[in-house]
Amino acid sequence: MRILVVEDDSALRQQLCQQLSRSGYIVDAAADGAEGEYLGCEFEFAAAVIDLGLPKIDGLELIGRLRRQHKTFPILVLTARGHWQDKVNGLEAGADDYLAKPFEMPELLARLNALIRRSAGFASPVLAIGPLSLDTSRQQVTLNEQPLELTAFEYRVLEYLMLNKDRIVSKNELTDHLYAQDFDRDSNVIEVFVGRLRKKTEPLKLIRTVRGQGYVISAIQRPSVADA
Ligand code: CA
Image: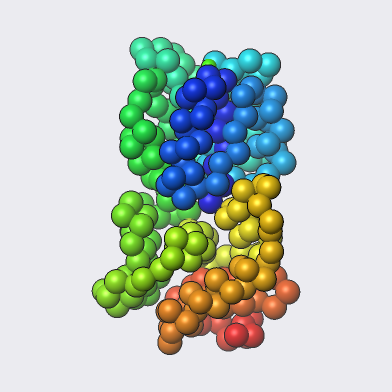
């Protein structure tokens, strides 16, 4: 999953990028509001972390611009401690949650995780589709209550599909969310991973290929749109 980080403090920006990458996210970082606006409008993100005090375009204005351009991904705002007005303004501008600086990285990760889940319509950290369940806080998957061994990449493919259940996810969208921009993208690789996930979740047939469009994960069988 792809996260946008907009923070002008380079040490904090670097720390955010490192921690988020370590947690399995793909991170695009911007050092000012203008770069943040460009990235936010150009690419698809699962969520954004935006500092309020930014050069060029401030955080509040940036959030407003993203929302006016119909960018609906959840936004976590970073504020200076004690500036309660900042928090209110941030939420009014269209942010979904805020964190006062200085903060602990585990708290930021937990909040971000919760925002992403909520925006996908899941209230609990455990995503479930039929007998398949995926615990986003522990990064563990079970099938019929038995642990399912997945590689880190397989986990990320499955998590993304489950967060977008009942919706067709194209290979392009998957590669956008799973690879860094400079990574050598190859949609054949996605096919291999989806194939492996299918094998591991057999005989459930939860993941279906929609010819020419992509993949959909769902507990409901719709054989008319599936070719696999
Ligand atoms: Ca700042």
